[in-house]
Length: 400
Image 1 (tube, rainbow, N blue to C red):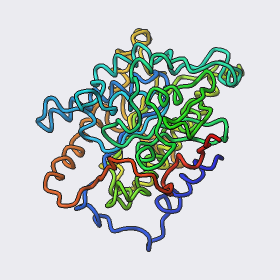
Image 2: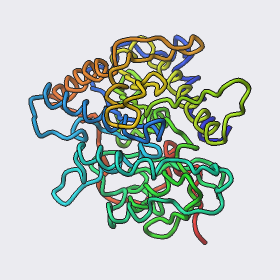
Image 3: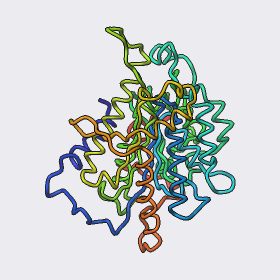
Image 4: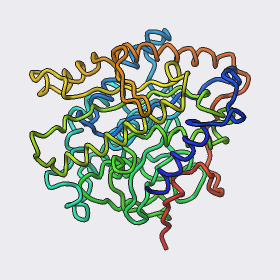
């Protein structure tokens, strides 16, 4: 197990999954201090980002209705966004600052973007990723350059975390807004970040804006297809930006899947390499979901929401129309993972989004009376020593 993954699950196990009574905080010890709102978006899955984008569209609509702000953006209601693969592209589209000071893309525009380009950007080559891993450049590099221009991690409206896998060091690398504004060598153009996290057909040379850091990046789906645990670890250890967040009780987390692919094979037929990659990716995503769900304990029904669906249960007539297919996926019963106990069905995914929107709006309204801020995003570049929370620094390779 690589260093970052081992560290994340060690923290989850020691501090949250099986804490000693002495370490357990009182249930409502910091409820008055507010909660950090987190949006986490999986990699491609069976829908290549469309299910997550459609989920965000429905969530934003519910948030607008419940808050009474008809023109509010999804970024207005979250403090941190983490996205892997095509999920990282969605995070960049919706949380990078545009010319008017608001997000570069609306949610409708982001949905159209992934519906039109998601398959090309996140689909593994028929030859298999491991056969092409040392050859082809990222497919979407030109698309991302046209979309983001010279905008970088510093040009985001909220905290952003987007992973890839660095072949140079053999470890995950996390592009982080916090690192970009605090340390030399950690700011990257957003076009390069998106190309790195979606590099499914081979490594792409990625260089920081100041050219101090170089990595050989492949898709974030290999590093951490479900980036929820990474986001939680980053927040709990980043006291500079989240000074009042001490445990998962202080978080509101929405984790969006992209549909579990149907990878079944007939008889004793051996699955293809692509099928194996997808099976591994979704298994890791489910494991993260189970661990995080256990970490939240009794508060997981109010503090944690996981939206996921299975392509195998979709009517075949809808499978050629991705938007209709994801609408049907959102109407599926929500599946909750229980560590070592499998899964159980609850309300529909749409019901869960609606219910969780209420919790997010409650926190948004509560902050209007705050004396102390829940989130203090750094706005200036001040080179400093790496934080212990900085996942990026675990695999930084500085240029000579």
